Length: 353
Image 1 (cartoon, one colour):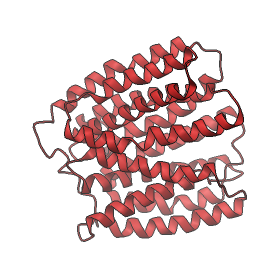
Image 2 (cartoon, one colour):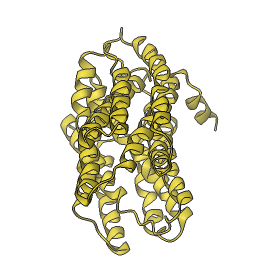
Image 3 (tube, helix red, strand yellow):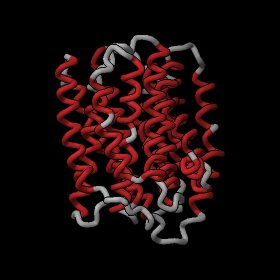
């Protein structure tokens, strides 16, 4: 417990906590809008796919730009664009233009969150993991608020409330810009493995993880409270993945999160607590893949983060066209893909004492 306490109380964690709120609120806005989308079946099918494509894929481009021009306050402008998209939607502007604007704001905020939490972390993964974990709580909150009669203008105020948090995080980031290689202490990959293999394997693991996430059997998830618990365990798992890496090392974290999650995911279809524990462990792999990519792309952490979001899109896109429909088929899929992930991560992670 002392080791965990020393990690979560480290000065480097400040940006992680600031961007936990920012990411949380970003997803609240996005999923508030998505839950209010009304229209024919084509719109209801196409808008979520468009959202995933435009919110995830451009992050690699924005990340590369942020790496080249780190003093550009991408997060601040992202908040303004996100809020603009929300206002356009509330004023019944073109639905596609509104969602596109929201997506751009979302992508800019995500990239800046990665830049801020990685550059000022001195090689720790916990700040970035805390930042990413906040999104899961925001997704379910946005969905729930979108189903109420809450005024758009309250959500606008909530969106603008991110600005002081973002400005403080930006100050912390700027204090590290004098060091040209601020991510030099990210040394999590196996240096005997070709760097391009590490990148390919890490992104492929993200793709697999994203695809598997939609196949996890959760027949128990029928009430609002159960949905809240599902997303909460997912968010906590993402946060704990970074803390585990900083406390026990990436290899142990990878093995535990990948292998130990399988029986809980497969046999928790009808039993909520078993399934939730599996989801918690499964979600920890997010920090593992990001740590590996940043270790290879030390000078471009924004690009490294953007590669993970491309992987997320590639993993979720097939779900819009094809799904396994039985518990048995999903369990077989989970087992097979888990073995593939384990073999890959075993090859590319650094061996520790």
